[in-house]
Amino acid sequence: MDICVLNPYFYPYFGGTEKVLLEIYKRLSKSNNITVITSSVGSEPGEETIEGIRVLRLKTSQRTLPHLPLPLASMEGLNAAIEKTGAEIYHINNRYQYFSSTIRAIKERSSGRIALTIHNSLPKNIDPITDFGGLAYDMFWGRRIMRSADIITAVSKSAMETTVPIAFRKKSKVIFNGIDYRLFMPSTEKSKVEKTRSLMGFDDGILLISNGRLTTQKGHAYLMRAVAELNRIGKPTNLFLIGRGPMEKKLNMLAKKLGIENRVKISHGISEQDLPYYYNAADIFVFPSLYEPAGMAMLEALSCGTPTIATGIGGIPEALKNYGEYIKIKDVKSITDATIKVFSDMQRYKKLALECRENVIKKEHDWDTIARKYEESFEQTLRA
Image (cartoon, helix red, strand yellow):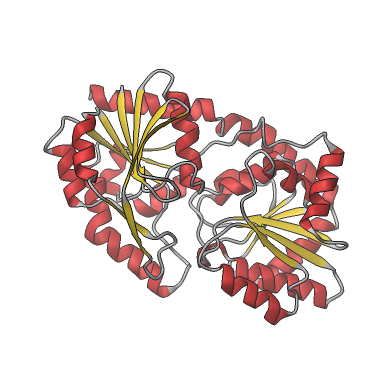
């Protein structure tokens, strides 16, 4: 098959969606012709080959808009580039960045079919403006893309049910995201784990870790307040937060205001190869999201055997099931209580994390299996 992948960002930019696309398409490139058309953010405009994937980076300007987790990337010559590919399948991975002219370029000037993946479900529980804005956008345009799509996939059942109207469900299916469980695993290199814990920079106390883009939806502010409360009641606790994003400055200011600036560190630029050591070095992974379609970082931590606390929203329960401790959204006391509960029974929660690795992650989140599911879905669409 000739497949054209459309997403405003691609490796080496490494958010959740970008990680998914790299893992899927480096596998599919072995037996298919893959072209990714993306922005030049983080790279120079031009063409290159990554893992057998042809990557075309277009000259790009960005605009940051309130309540959007990522800036809008305006790519010059997008529709002309689409026309030149002549692909059989055009795989759109962000319904917030592609509009009517792009859909026309695919539908009217090529024989291509459209596949749409819902990586970001309809926002809920973030704040009134974001929640309403997301619904208004989908009513005005997002659902028109879904109508145009020949096949819709979603990264969780929750993402499907909250975002895709019933009228389009017949052409829809759930394909989970994967985890490289051969990389994300309990480490046998104790010295490397101990060195990593030392690099995280805390001398004493419970060590919490969280990983996610620094936006309101990830709930980091509530986690920081819980850390402050734990320290106030005599439970020394530290937070190592991995991520970057528009909330970084505000979160640093909040840590200072709460008097826990020495108990909180925000870091980014950690390589994929080193990330498992950070999960292994921490005592507990905390995922306080207000909205979460899938939760890849949580699965990475669980695959390393790290006890996990998470909100029971979106696609999280589909992955975590009964293998961790649930907290309420926007609830500092819930995070505080869960941290004390898990830390007081670490062996039990480590065992649960390892059971999740064996019973859920290896069976439902294997990248080879997931790549085949996308390939089979696209082939079925072309035969229809």
